[in-house]
Image (cartoon, rainbow, N blue to C red; front, top):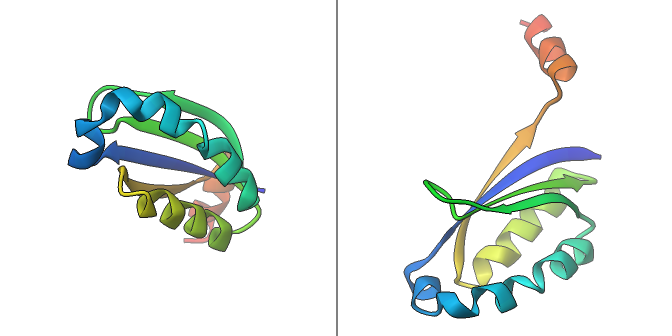
Length: 96
C-alpha cells in the first residue's frame, strides 16, 4: 500500500469549539478504516499545521475520498502528500 502524509489545519469554526476537538477526533480512525486506510502515525502539532497524519492507502482514490470526508466536517482544511521511500524516489529520479 502507498504511504501518504495528510496535513490538517483547524478552521475558524473548529477553533471556536476547540475544547471539543479531542472528542471529535475520536471518530477519525473509524473513518479512515471505512475508506480502506490505516493510520500509521498521527500527531497534534504546533506551527503551520495543527495535525499531521501518516496513512497507508490501497489507492489514490481512497485517500482522496478520506480527505474529502475530513473536509466535509467543516472543522479542518486538508492537504494530501504522497510519500516515497528513498529507493523509490531514486528510481523516479533515474527516469529523468
